Image (cartoon, rainbow, N blue to C red):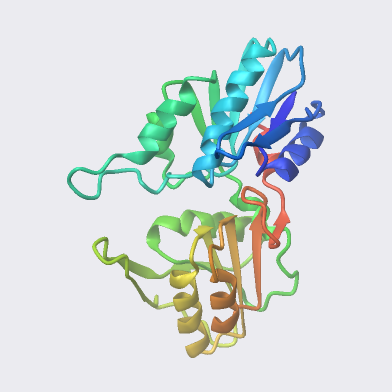
Length: 282
């Protein structure tokens, strides 16, 4: 049975369709003191708990769902993290700081037999779990909503570390070149600088592909460089469309034609589901 977290209901429904497993009706309740509780169906045999953990509340809710399905009789619990919060805190950047992704992974491990997480910040994050954990690459689905008439398309990643995402989207689309921007981050100030690659972009349609868009600052800077160099149209494709605060406005004013995302984080730009990619692992 597919058991959805409150922030992953559409994803869970899509996963139920892709696997022909039943979708459990879960009740979520918040109390005036800030605590919460969940209620799952009774008599569960195998539970697939699907919960993006984009907030501290979502992390607590996931732990409650895992415990609830055990109470309901589940002999096997598989946890699917469409988006794993704290994944970018995969090391202690300053003395005295935690490795937050490791702490979260250990907590999640206590209530499950197996974990699947969609495009974590680094695949090595799966090593933090105390149970078998696998990354699921859903980047290929981002090719589906792209216009079919892209002119001499160029698929760019905002940095070298994400070029595999750009390559996967390009391969799924079927044609085009791939390149990346040079990106440097100052961890003391949080400022990010982007240097353009050597790829020619004039009069070409460009797709900037990344794993996550959080504030949109780095992406909008990259898009601004592309427009300065005469790109025809610029599209943005990301697996995890966090789009915090005014990120969408930043991208629109930078000149983005359209933003495409998956439903790992359910937003208005979630044009395609990553559930079929996950279904192959269940």
